[in-house]
Image (cartoon, rainbow, N blue to C red):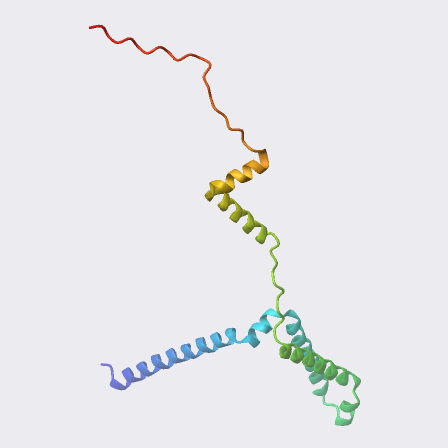
Amino acid sequence: MVKATEVIDKEHHDMAARTKKAKKAASSAAATTSPWVQRLVEDDELRDNFRVAFEAAKDAYDRVSDGKGPKALVEDKKVQKDLNKAAGALKDAGAALKDGPKKKPKKRHPFRKLLIAFVLAGAALAISEDLRTKVLDALFGKEEEFEYTSTTTPPAPPAPPAA
């Protein structure tokens, strides 16, 4: 026999799992739609700046955590170099984020206008007979008017039937 508390606990667990899934989905959707995250995904230079800063800070931390005294750490040239490198990379990354995303150059389609002009000209020629005759006259010269006269004699009409 199932106790009422077990049923309530199961329902509570299912509802908590659903809300966790919903929160996770919402946070991942927010992360992918964030302009900062999109910029980080798309911009190789920005990612490189963050990577360099992380590696330099990690190297500096490794040297600091060796157990040397404070005076030795202050005078350590490698720690100073790593910290300066990390600071410079973070400064560049911050400036890149502040400037905003790089705008992609507008794609130019040089033949698009020409194609549209040809399509419109073809449609105009197909629709307008006057325009068509003007273009043909301009290209091939004016057409001569011509009357056809037969050089053969027409057959004689049949004789009326005799009654």
